[in-house]
Length: 267
Image (cartoon, rainbow, N blue to C red; front, side):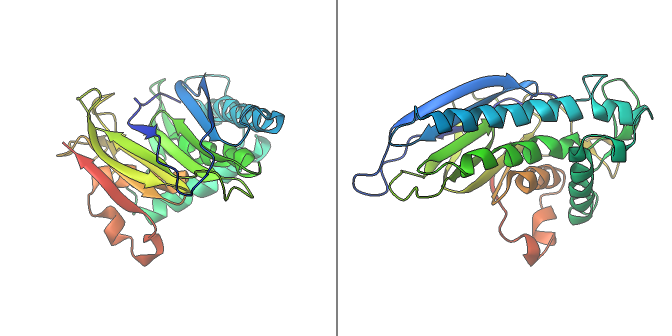
């Protein structure tokens, strides 16, 4: 999986309740070809169970890289594309992502596609456009199970925020600044997220790399980035790509997707 530049940043927010917990701790590691940061608020963020959950989160992301990276010829997905491995015989995550990717193709009317050319120049099944969001969403489940915490996970600019059980006295709100492409330190908009996700698709970091399945060519959009917010990063990520290609995609999807919304369009 290749890296996107960080397009969103988490900022502190005044306590939402008198006496609410603000003590925080952060971890940053390079995984899936991009920097991933985890921020946790808790009365005691040095607790062993928090460390264990963070380690498990990063273990899951490394597993996702082992399974899905098209930059690694030994990954399960690379072997599937070469015809050396069947999905049914591979890591069970392949079958799960195959189902999610199929749903994403249907929901976006084909604006999200899995028929793409990989880094080796060959064309084949490629669900990696949705894998980062899916993998981070899955991995965040380890933090959701830890009592008394609020957390924010930032994977190259796409974020998941949430909290564990019994977190009523923890400040659970995160102010997320969406960077303005081409303006280091510039902020296009700021939104507050307590439980939910934020994803951005754009061309500022890697140029015209988003392929429009309708033309089989790099998208020539009028904007440089689109940011979508919603309950799950998997789908915020898919809709950010779809809305970059067609600004009306989410509105056209109907009430089933009303929990997702475009929060920023730049360029």
